[in-house]
Length: 165
Image 1 (cartoon, rainbow, N blue to C red):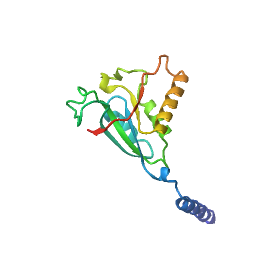
Image 2: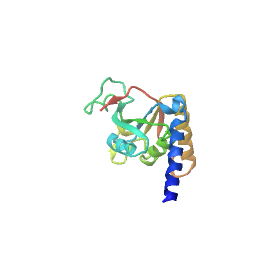
Image 3: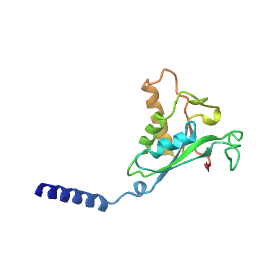
Image 4: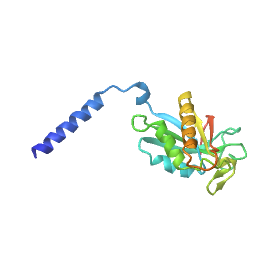
């Protein structure tokens, strides 16, 4: 019983120290990223399971029309995408990229799995220079891993307006 009381005291002390530690403004603030990789409902579901993800919202981006909807987004050049908001103190952007690569076929630029067409192609949209650098480095590392026998087709592009589905 004394040992359990001691362990509880140690854990409580450690938890109090962590909660009292100042967080930098960048790590305290939720971050946002946008990923396209086939059916947005599948991508949304995959990201919702990642520890530290706050929200994953299905929608459209990358096209040339405003306010696309399910009936017209493809004609406007948009792709199905997911806007992910996460807590950077719990999960990193690099870990989100790892989750993305596991749930797409980065070699297929014509769609994903049974979803065919340019509206389903894989794209990582970056919102700032650090996301761009991380996405490019991650894609390069995946290509060098020789996990795939063909070159990667996943685009890395500057984010454009995102429209929730």
